[in-house]
Length: 119
Image (cartoon, rainbow, N blue to C red; front, side):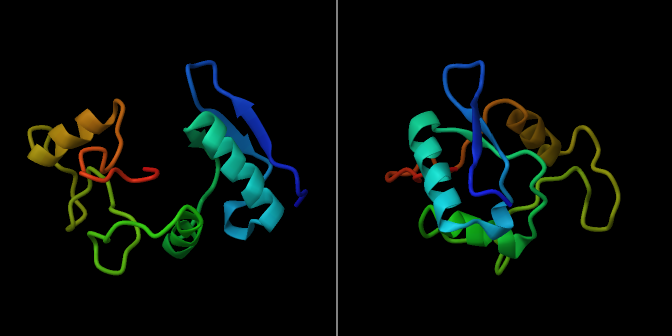
């Protein structure tokens, strides 16, 4: 994998798409480029990164210590319309209302007294 990271600004007020890198195996130089892009664009999209939970946590740790995890030893919270038993939630299920709301802009912990560095 080449050491250069491709950062393409979005056609929006802020944000960029980052390609040319595998987040699961970043070099120090690649991380520096990503961190610089984060400070410049505030929002980074990483398409086609299919990380395991452990790989996602390792990447998140580069930004700092994550907030207390809500799902025990899982570093991410599953967001799905599938119930624990495997069935699909009804459209009037309260969880479905939350999921529909999350389809717009969503950020975690912005309401906390000390906001998160990233979300």
